[in-house]
Length: 145
Image 1 (cartoon, rainbow, N blue to C red):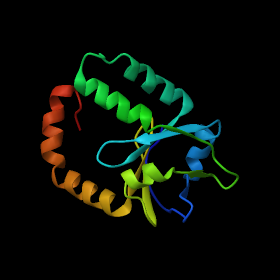
Image 2 (cartoon, helix red, strand yellow):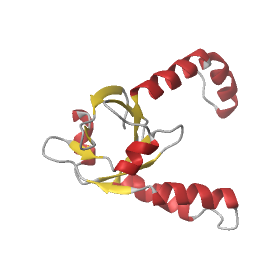
Image 3 (cartoon, rainbow, N blue to C red):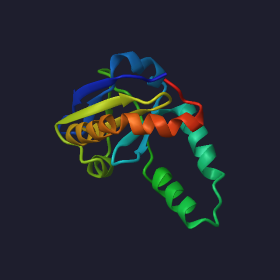
Image 4 (cartoon, rainbow, N blue to C red):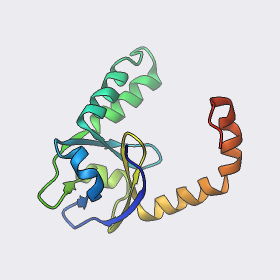
């Protein structure tokens, strides 16, 4: 399970270090793709295979399903960790997520999310401000605190 929030730098070549505690889970390779809210998501290969299977089952007749599936699959790239535990984020994904010098990597259960530091701080602040109302809405989903 991926949890936590980690601050890392991204070098000029587009390499970012994966937090040490997650490297074993991603040592056999991983997949990065576009996420929601202008973030990127990194899946282990087994988790990506589950996601790709779900995407393949979306109804091709639905315009929104096709669009979402295309964005996720066309944006995907296989990654390997180098000896320093870094991955190379492709330029088109760095552009999509507006990644520059500082990034935040968050654990999100079955995936990592990679955020531009300023976008993460803005998103997190907004979510913190709405936490009580979000929790109220989630009561119907059997999420109670």
